[in-house]
Image (cartoon, rainbow, N blue to C red; front, top):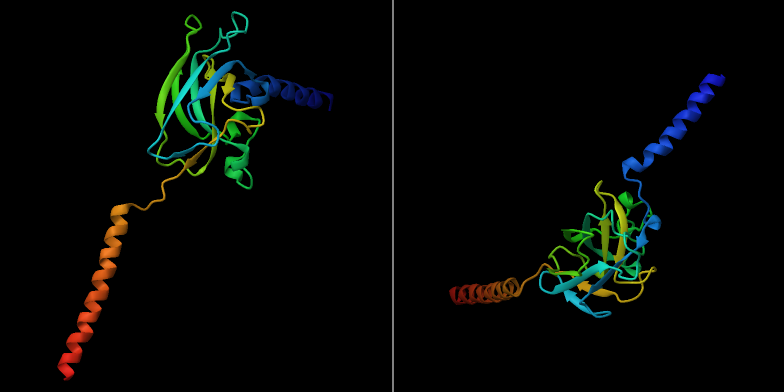
Length: 203
């Protein structure tokens, strides 16, 4: 009995040591060391597939040297604001990052060199499949093991400030609407023509 209990305890201890190896990074464990800005103004509405966002990121220069020594990659993402997550479990924020659904839209990935702390930026066209919602931008720093080690974002901790909106593509195009109207008019004219011809035959 004692041996079985010892084995159980040993297994539990081993599991605790192995957990970090399986992507169990918590968002709450990350430091906000990156300064991230984006071009949209607060509450600006962007059109999917049309409008561009300029994103800028870099290390907070007030932090001590060596803070970014483990950073290897920066990944920038488009994230749902809290207001657009209500009653939408498929956008739910989860502290365990591998299960988190806040930032589903990838913007870019760039290598990071601690020796070069200059600010980086890029222009990104909002992709056509981005749904209508309220968003912000977040950047994650990854280490050599491809694990999140730090972050930065364009909004506050509660994701309520400096937000912008994206208007999704409706799926309808002006050309299709014109064709639909023409077809409807043609159908009506054809119908009147049919009845007119039938009336003439009767007389």
